[in-house]
Amino acid sequence: MAAGDVEAGKAMFAARCASCHAVGPMATSGFGPQLNRLFNRRAGSVPDYDYSTAMKQSGIVWDDKTLATFIANPGKTVPGTKMRFWGIGNERKVADLLAYLHTFK
Image (cartoon, rainbow, N blue to C red; front, side, top):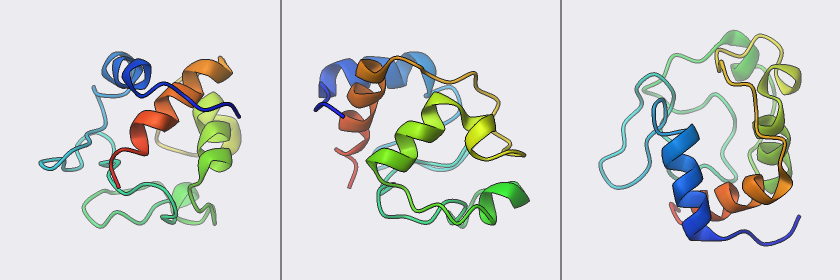
């Protein structure tokens, strides 16, 4: 996957993700889990969010590849996920989003 553009990813996050997810120093889980320190984290492991059984048992550890696959089609990647999102099929937009999420380590 090509390197993404952080600013484009920030705009993508605001448009497609921020209604359910939060990032940054004050981020807490709400309708979806907060996404700080997402990479190398086991899926379904943020303590203040009630994940689906499917997500908790998925065995996924988030990295660029697993997250890109999930973002492209959440329901296919983790059948039974609570995430109600059609997905982002455009690889450039996914790369931009990943670049932005990498800034929250």
